[in-house]
Image 1: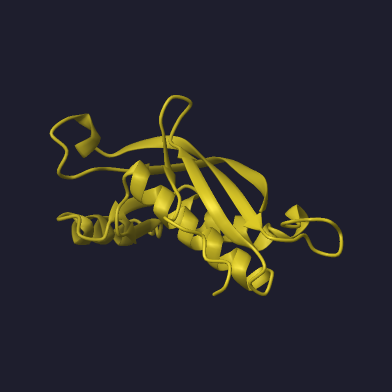
Image 2: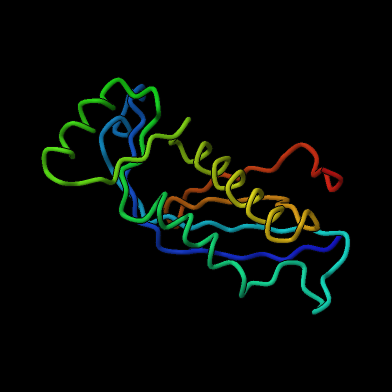
Length: 151
């Protein structure tokens, strides 16, 4: 298998862990980065695993989901209150996801990236691993137990 890696930097977004017993239960933000490792059994006609020039659509997906947004757990007990508040102030930047921890964001970035890669390459490429950096000191990674190159 061959791999190549693309890194996206500077996605400022806020989140909170409502059940945390420390400061993470408070709204806070980071300047997030995503490192995505693509894998394929063979390159394309240009010798590329993933043509980095064709990843604008993935960057756009990340921008809509993470750029200057407030990412919350879909089951956050204050989700409706936050939505009401931002609506009253003409803001539309709340993004509910399954798990807004660094680990949960890593899994979501993998899902978004893998779907994009499979579609963009007609199934030739998959995402092997994603590392999400919430800052320069903390990160989480997600990789499927097995990368299925046949589906």
